[in-house]
Length: 74
Image 1 (cartoon, helix red, strand yellow):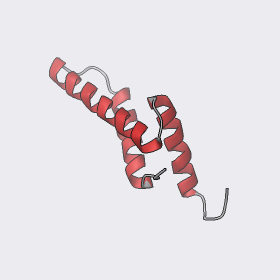
Image 2 (cartoon, rainbow, N blue to C red):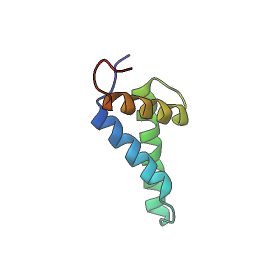
Image 3 (spheres, rainbow, N blue to C red):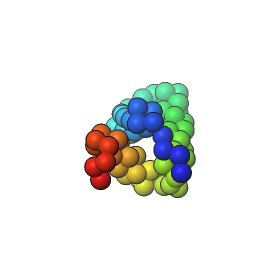
Image 4 (cartoon, one colour):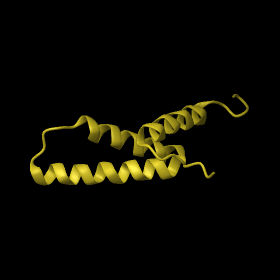
């Protein structure tokens, strides 16, 4: 499996979480937000080789943690 670059993966996770935390938009903005959340969920799943967004987020966090560890530490 290809492993996404940590900076890209971090951006996807942060944007997804920010959009999920944000509520209270008007109908048009809310629909755009919903579509973006769907796009991010799909991209996270593809990037992490999962089929559910919660599993994708967990896998992404694991990958990001591993990327912060020095080489050879596991």
